[in-house]
Image 1: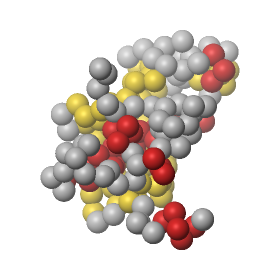
Image 2: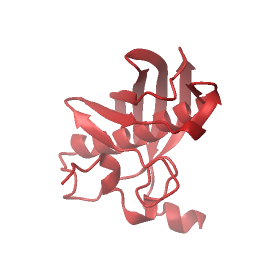
Image 3: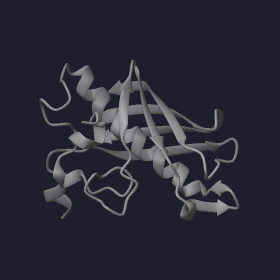
Length: 158
């Protein structure tokens, strides 16, 4: 059986995100995993993710960084609170700020690798930095401020 990704522990109500929701059959369904104090995520772009010939469009890069950061934030807070994945419910996060620096083109036919580190955990806020690689080249750097979703979020905004 394959190892579960962080996103596999999201409650069903929040597992519908286009980027990371396991229940969204049309989405990217990314999976993030702990690797020491970092999280890693691998993603294989599809031919329809094209922005320019042979390259991924920038929106996919931003989307992957965004969702990998949100999963990393949830897992980091869980870990900081001494909880194990799968034992207690995993909190969900939304993005308060997303900054992406595009450094080089991302090849459409190569697997994308992202590595995330935690810059800060303060209350409900987690700041995550991400490096995105394609064929061993650093292609983008992201910084995400993620905010833990309050318990009454769904009832308040539905």
